[in-house]
Amino acid sequence: MEKKMTTNMPKIIPITSLKDTTKISKMCSESKDPIIITKNGYADMVIMSAKVYEDLVSSGDFYLDED
Image (cartoon, rainbow, N blue to C red; front, top):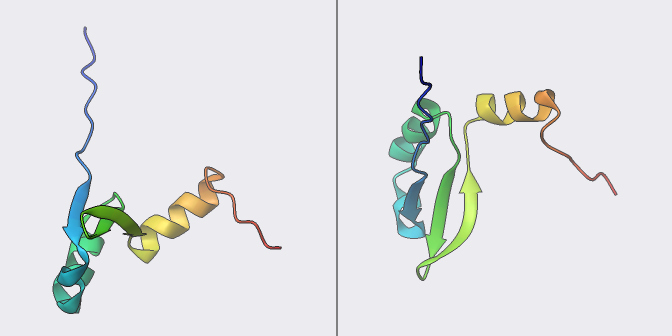
């Protein structure tokens, strides 16, 4: 049986969309992937739900430098 590899396209939104906090919060909570925020057409920030962040940190796939 052949396994199919699937990848989710990242969600990319402009920084002006951050004005609608309810919509952004819902978008984050419904997604298991980070959301890329653009400014002037370029990636500027990445946001994700607290649950996704906690899972990422606890999995060991994420390194926090506490200097």
